[in-house]
Image 1 (cartoon, rainbow, N blue to C red):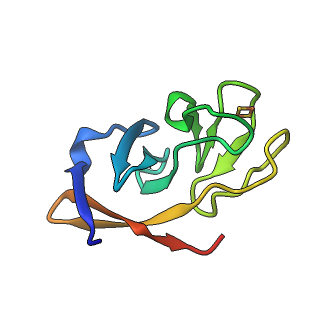
Image 2: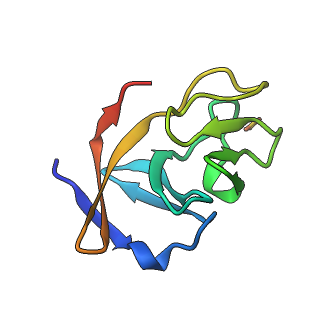
Length: 108
Ligand code: FES
């Protein structure tokens, strides 16, 4: 699979998360508080909760259900109760558009 266009970078606000499904994989596309775009697995590893419904702060997203925060750069949980990481996908910005390949994950 090749990278798919998700949306224009300008369509996502700072500290906003948006859920997309690429190749059947739910992905949270998140712009952190510094304006950098990240793509992580959208399903919390503690329960079947969409992380994109959570809260973005700095370079992490917090699951609204029980408060685990996940690093947007590594996918690792920063606090319990979640202890397994979510996948992190490579993001490319091409001519102002966000492209993600759901088959390529960064090691975490
Ligand atoms: S479901 Fe996400 S922390 Fe519990």
